[in-house]
Image (cartoon, rainbow over all chains, first blue to last red; front, side, top):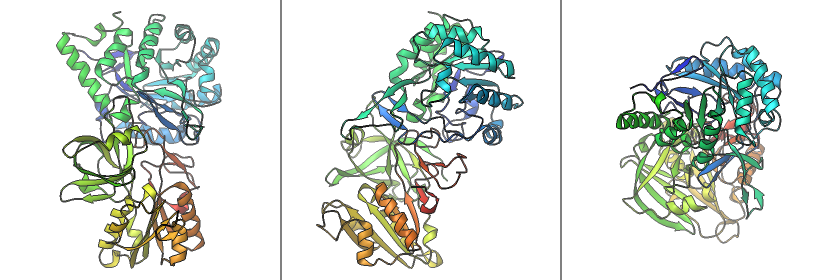
Length: 300
Length: 266
């Protein structure tokens, strides 16, 4: 039985990854999960310099999920390389580093800085965070802006590049095509869906940022639909995410067209979720007589 | 620090302590590792919910591997918890956070201060402080507990481990006013403070401690998601650049919930 998948020449032992921002760099979850069993650890977004992020409250629960407006707080790429990448050196899993920035130059600086880091197998470019005012999503909501930044990043990147797409667009297929046309090696989707929650007794927004990105099981049908549309619009691999809680959810994404999947907000509910998805996929394959995970991809 | 886990917890007992305040005892495998000031994340079984509810640990019974949670019903999650009966199972993530540095009380006059639903974690704190022996033992342990009115909870239990002072907002019991008013009115002897309660109270304690040359350790509360330091949802502002974040933010769930008041930018 084969559970390994390949994206842009990088071979993953299984298709299960962590969604950026929900797993730190794996350190915090290593009490719960053997990181060696994951297809990849996708790290929290990192910028060229430390970012403070947004004021609190940064998180709120909503029906079937949550809102977050962390604002991409991060320690900057130097600390990340020295501490987080060093920590990950001890593990037999692939490492995908999520990169964020306010300007194109910010992104390029991080991408160049990580070019020589052996522990970085791939880069995921965050052009879809809804919680920062400058950069990020500004590059991810217009096809021409996405094309432009993807092309520039591809010119300097030494590792394969995944563009992480926002669901907050009119046509996900158009965005996927723009990323592919600019040379992206893969795309990942969906980032969170912009939402809002109001406390009617305090007569205030629950989040200090007013809006936040929605994640969790409630967004899964939206994510599956978008992964289906994107993967049928392009030929590059798609990494699917959005509300994945179980192996059944993950297999839905794979059938919709995803080569790999990521578990995000569910880590907060079930810190063992990633491993349970890995084991559940194996069990499904055994029961259904599936020899190779790649046979399940895009069957619809 | 002990390893964190998410596990089933068997309900030993549950009773109503005061209006909307419940007293829940749970059997958990990690009870023996808990230090006072730590908390657990409790998951509602309602499938529409995602996140653990952070609840401080009020007391530990190591022998029977039981932790005691005293919590207020504030929403649908805690309303569900209030329905649990002995023999039921709940899902718990823990032990979380750092806890109070009891060693800071050695040879000192220690005061535990709680306000409202911030009172519970100080009980185990007072209990352990009063049990410390030799050079580690505090010279004296006092407790100052603040409530809205005379519908108080746990105050009688503090009397077992400390000299107890009570403040109520409406003046129906003890000093009329807040915990600082009680400290001043009763002239509570104090070198070091361990406190938990609403933000205005903690700000007041920080100022009072600074004015009087007192060391203060404050337990903070914030809306949390993961509870284990990964999501960066529950940060507080710090005076200096934090070692983990490299900005002036510390994670309440893992770097705290207890902080040295001098390190906080409140």
